[in-house]
Each structure stands twice: as C-alpha cells, then as structure tokens.
Image (cartoon, rainbow, N blue to C red; front, side, top):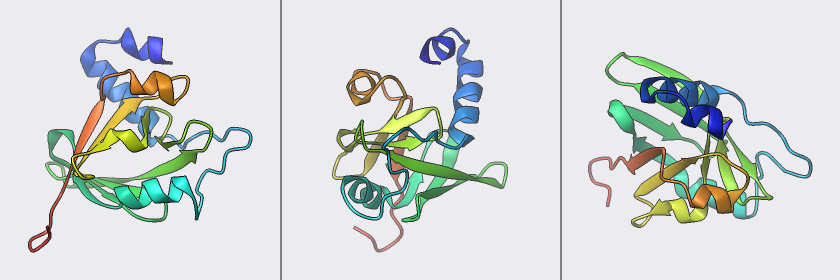
Length: 141
C-alpha cells in the first residue's frame, strides 16, 4: 500500500490517502479497536477537541473514537472512525494514517499523522502526511 501511494502523483496521492482514511480501520488479532481504558484511551483523550487541518478543514474528535471532518469551504462534512492498534501503540485513522503518542507535540497543540506502514517504528521514521493544529475556542488557554 505504501509503495502504491508513493508512486502516485501528489494530487492522486492525496485523493487515495483520503479515501483510505474514510475506510474503516481493519481489525487485527488481539487488538482491541476502541478501548475504554489504558494507553489507547489516554491517547484518544489527548486528541479530543477541534483541530484545523490542511485546506481549512476542521476535525472534531470525540471521546467515542469518532471524528467529524468538516470542509468549511464546501459546507460539507463526513464521519471518520478511529481505532487503537495495541500492538503498535498507535491510533489508526482509517487504513491510511497513524498517530503515536510522540506525534502529539507542542503541548498537544499539534498532531502529525503519518502514513501507515509496518508498525510504529516504521511510521515514526516517515514525514508527517497530515498535520493538525488544535483549534482554540475564545476564552480557552
């Protein structure tokens, strides 16, 4: 998958990765997809809230392993599903992106999603594919 995406022109890469991000995460043996306790829940809680992504898209992450993606310019929205990969210690966004605890930086104000690969060590070596910046509501600090 990673090689297939890498061979695509940038415009097609973005569309292909976006389609994979909308796809439901795959279950793997021994992996609890949406834990209510533990490291997965802790990482999700750090991600809960509103985030700005590329092209003025707003992402609202809930504590129920779901995210509403709103394209402000087109006044449209989609529901995204997240899952936990206990083996890799990462949150999966569809079948395209992965977020490890070290990908949340600047006091949890920046989230750097990477293309999924063969485990968290491989993902950690890749450049961020999608970067989110936390949206601060008026009066928040």
